[in-house]
Image: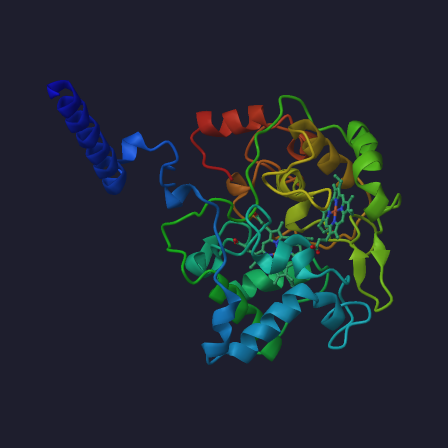
Length: 328
Ligand code: HEC
Ligand code: HEC
């Protein structure tokens, strides 16, 4: 009899203990507990456009987004405002309206401008920076900084970055700094990869495909309607960092389709083709601040223009760190 009572006691006690543990969900006992992710390791996420309806500048923000995503319709060869531009949309390079992590997004613009920029050697406002892309990436001319269009673009960009603090560099902001390779980037190898992975959309002559409305379905990568030699993408590190994370179309940071070598070699191939030239010789007034992949001399180092264009970049980087000159 005692045995049965004991058995009963221990089973009941066991069940109670089990229920108690379940009830309090003692974390280390649970197999399905997911460790909370440190939010600072997650890629930047743009604020939600659903909130726009409540904002006073709702209309301006919408117009800003439209201008960034369909720029060629307003400023392009068949633009309804001005025609002296190449027809690219800002969003061809600042993907998803400048919101995509690792897609050259605008996350840190609001927090960091106005700022000192070594390219101009001046304190630059966001207006100046936007106009830089109109002049270089869109191979056009600067917009009137008082125009409704400029105000709309800036309002939209500022709204996107409103939650980013000055001291912060969110994961996936701008273009990724990808590692250098040990050799020079090779245009011949790049051409082979281009034919295999890029040509179907950007075409064998690099000139892309224009739609019925005169704007690009597939934007050009070289030729008369591409970005000019003063543009950010003309630097190999910018081009390689952009395509590694985003091209061929359908790729993203978590689904990359190019090896590191392929990204650098394609950058070398595309940026060795013909493209518009504009005189930006006043750029980088302090030559020691030129980025190491800026392909135009003079330099504050003994390396050739050729090496500054195609690499190998590691020896140049080492030269600057040894001589304690901070270059970008
Ligand atoms: C051909 C590609 C291309 C196009 C088109 C383009 N940009 Fe850019 N943009 C760049 C690159 C490259 C950078 C420099 C990114 C870097 O250095 O990491 C840049 C930088 C910027 C920045 C500064 C970002 C920062 O974090 O400092 C702003 C603002 C900007 N672009 C606005 C625009 C606007 C507005 C348009 C359309 C009128 C536009 N861009 C069109 C390639 C482009
Ligand atoms: C399936 C079609 C497709 C393929 C393949 C493709 N792209 Fe693109 N590419 C696009 C589209 C579309 C855009 C514009 C993106 C947007 O507006 O959202 C673009 C934009 C670009 C841009 C920035 C805009 C410009 O004109 O300068 C570059 C640079 C680029 N692609 C390079 C490449 C490279 C290099 C490859 C091969 C590794 C490649 N693309 C393969 C469709 C493609």
